[in-house]
Image 1 (cartoon, rainbow, N blue to C red):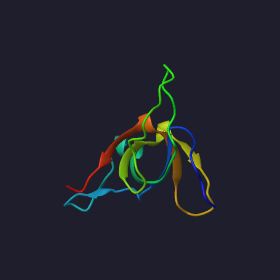
Image 2: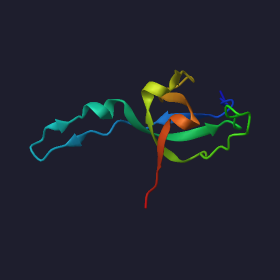
Image 3: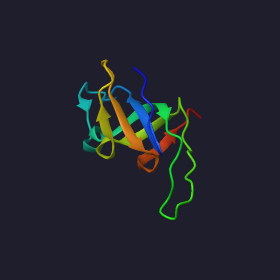
Length: 99
């Protein structure tokens, strides 16, 4: 099944949670890590308009790895085991580069 977001929304496939392991063998889980998740953009809408009616450019591209706050997204079931969320472009925290 293909999914195409509308307006200024993006479809993000969440990556598995990363949990740090301390030298002692304990697993470190911070409270913030439960809400902030990394994901890969799988689809991008065509853009929307701002409050003044001017077009909003889509700054995000398919394939980019982003940091999100899942509280601002809508979970969608696309028939698989992957976690997918739809976010408005403004609710993406940032793009993660490998540099």
